[in-house]
Image (tube, rainbow, N blue to C red):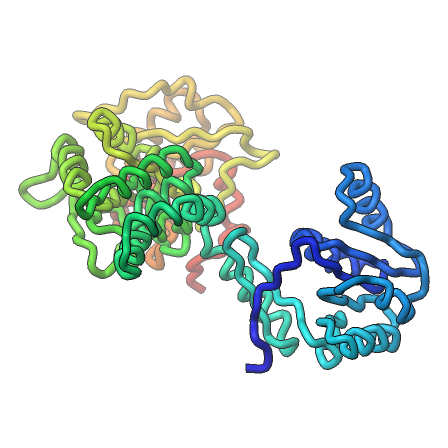
Length: 470
Ligand code: SAH
């Protein structure tokens, strides 16, 4: 190991910065966040440093002192107990000279972009205070460090700070309750890996605090169950949200639908019990009431239950009905949106749903037949400059195309059907209201399919980008 990572407490301590330009500014901002008292020596100062200084004075903070001068040794000698020097001018020799003064006095020194002359180097920082992650390549591969940082940033919930702060406020109470370190560890693991953490991430801090207190008060091992209604998107697992993935990976039980792709289901925690509740489940389809009841039962038994649905749970997904039951029964729940079939299929087919030249609005329509009929407000659907997206429309496609024509849409209005959108089996069929039904019939398209009608469909031939067969 070339460098030992340590976290430096600079609160109220002196830091000397040599240089007043943009590079110094970046370091000053960091050091200021750590509440140091900063003296900056520079021949001149950039506008942002001057503004920081003005604001510091205005608020009476007294944390920033600017000295307009060329740096020399006297500036270091004049300060009491300097904790850190940062040399950040664009003059390499001057930076090295300043660093040598610091080293001689056993003061930590950082020379910007010159690790060889530094005793300490600045890491790349992910700040979810009080949680902090510092990454460094010792100066060897800063771009790689930046990439890693982006990856880690994406993995860490934005609410991590709130959770850590909440844990901090309970630390003493938990210590007082559990004598043994391993009991404390088990307690905190349950907190950080379940509904209490999720409530904190969802910014429901009072609920999280109450649950944490209840958990602490409970004498035996107390477990609160919760239901997560999660949108699994249209098929491509890359379209899951970070939150969906996180909850899927902590689930005890997963209830999933026919529309959830195998690739998405694969991302559920290995040990979780998976229960298929698809609407076409063999001879005994699971009724909606039955599903609602199961969710309540499993959560009451203390499980983290993921109800995984295709697309978005609130778009033709009966998500509302399921959580109404949970709400009535007092079971905590959360809803995680997913990419709905219309967004997923349109993007992956190369059909923008709106476009300034073609459509200023878009409608999502349930296009299924009810006893051979489709009860829709057709005059509204044939208004100009709008895109129509029909879900569940495969068997009713002829009725859809015929009715739209009968109510005034031109037979030449472009229309497309997307089969198994966003998956590697995606097929896109393009025609118009006259031709699409026979094109689709001849190709033997199978559900799930989505129908898009409107002039935006004419863009597909130029904008297609996914799963293109040459
Ligand atoms: N909640 C889901 C929709 C459920 S209704 C969502 O937001 O996407 C089921 C209908 O969604 C299917 O009949 C089909 O029209 C559409 N659908 C879902 N996934 C699809 C996919 N990968 N490709 C095409 N259509 C899809």
